[in-house]
Length: 588
Image (cartoon, rainbow, N blue to C red):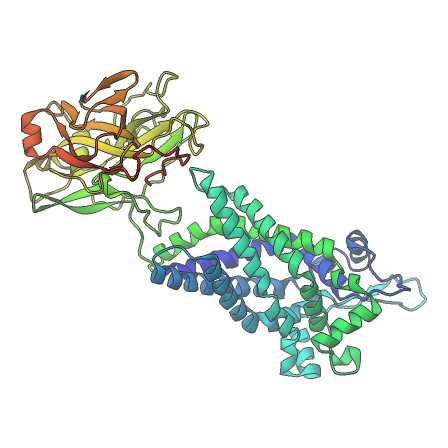
């Protein structure tokens, strides 16, 4: 089953929660929208949002603020369910065909298709709801024997629907259809603004947006959409609230309704109830976006548990090839927060898991779903952790961390620690990059133009934590032997190398760059010694064009495959380095 269903379920759930929280404002705004302004208003007319709130409470009680909530909850669940299902379906088609994210134009088209589907399916529901929420209860005087005033009973959803069918016929359920179709532009504006703001915000962050950030983005996007389309909201509400019985004549068309408003109330009539509607719409949308993101994860898990959806695996088997021999390994994969979409990573990382990035002082939380057939864990180096979070089966602690003397960013690593040596040989390792506080995501003159990760590992298939068809020993960099893909840089670029070494006593390596020196702190050398479970961060200026080699100086290791080519491409034009101000894009 596709993610469309999960999006539909979470959208419906988020709509129900947001509707319950803001429904009194919906009642007030609906009544203000259908109220016709007059030079001589009656005592029953509402002056503003506050006055409407007080009068409804006085004449109808608290339940008056929730008139028609049953039909509203049904309507919003159907509306949001249909909208998100069709929007995500169209989005998937565009992204599959274009092999990229949707453009702004495609996003607007997807919104138009989804919105139109919603209007044709749900207009009858909202017509019934509008009739109920705009029904004003009148007081009926009793006999003059001192009895209290008695409220008239509000019509039920079924009674309202039958009344519409009796007085207006089936077409009465589609009152306000034309302005409703025009109002499809409201969610188009809303979601376009939301996606654009979200994309810009994500560029400034190194992690997923929080629930409250979704709340703010939802509020701002709905504020823009409602402010632009509000006159059509008023026209739609008045057409849905009107009936032949109440008017005594055929209901006016959209143009006639517009003329009547201008004639009797002026331009201001198109903005009746604007303040309450803006407040209601903004809060409803904000709660919807916040709750939908939370409920989407639950929807995915629910579908997985019910067997309606295949689970995505974060730790899973991987067929890996050395010198034309395919061996079964385990691998850490990165997914989005719903565990539905695998995140891409550079090919040169090979067997390494996704890069975890954080600043000094950050709290790093990793949600790991083990779908392998053996126990695994995640044990970090370079991060402080509690005993419960260590990822090992024995008591221990770590005092590792970044000091002020360290560079702009330094590399550490993580690995499975259930059976340390066997898990590492199985491929369960990955890098961690720790940045100085306040520098992750912000450009600095010390930032590199390009970065590469290189893990020197002697992998023993006979000592893997999973059964393998091989018992060979492989000398590798990132799991590759003799070559690594995509190790290309431009002339005069500043390149940062994140070096790691994993393994036991045979894993003492000396990394060598054939093109020249690298800088480690204030030391310049073309060699760097690596002990088991050690990490080094070095910088290189790519000033020697051509094909070069990164290799281990130990002859046995290099002969066994612990070497890789990297290419410095020729300079274009004068060859002088450009003054780049773009921070290196994180690999994950």
